[in-house]
Image (cartoon, rainbow, N blue to C red; front, side, top):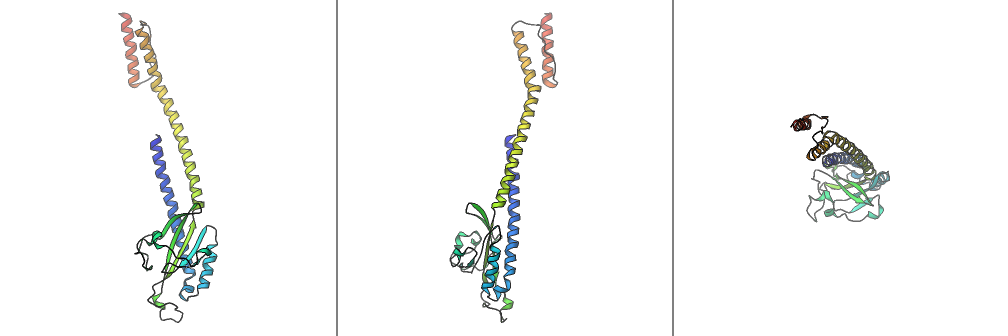
Length: 247
């Protein structure tokens, strides 16, 4: 019972956690696309300070670990964590860049997922990258600040804290384990009571009567209180005692 219940609980908890993470990933993707849309015109017109101001404002919201922007070569041109500005991103260390050859600039994300989960300051963080591609239709416009051959303007990378979700799921896991443990205890107590009444007590009574007969007491009878095989055995024992008494 413990093994079966424990395995079932583990499967259910894994499914619940995967569902929660999936919902957060979809929310983070929508959040990242919202940032992209908010800075769309500023990026095309090369109004970087205006775009960075929007990113910084969003990066100060609760639950947002950071918002950063880096170019196709991997240099961070803005980050809500100011210490990162000007540094280079290690593409080989980023899960989403596994499809790119080492040393080559970022051109296009071809992997099916753009998220990664990592640990920062003792809690998990969901990272989501969203590339900003150059608009070819704008290459002849006066507002266009980037040459048409430059296909990627940069990448928006956001980090969403999973601390609150992990704490919530830890509560779910704890309550589920307590409920399952209580259910196993109740089930064990019921099975023990049933076995004591239907098996242990009749067998003990039959063993005691057998010992009495072995000692020469042929007046011993046992009460038939069960059905099935044990009841048939008790009746057969009483019939045997009756036959021995007559003999």
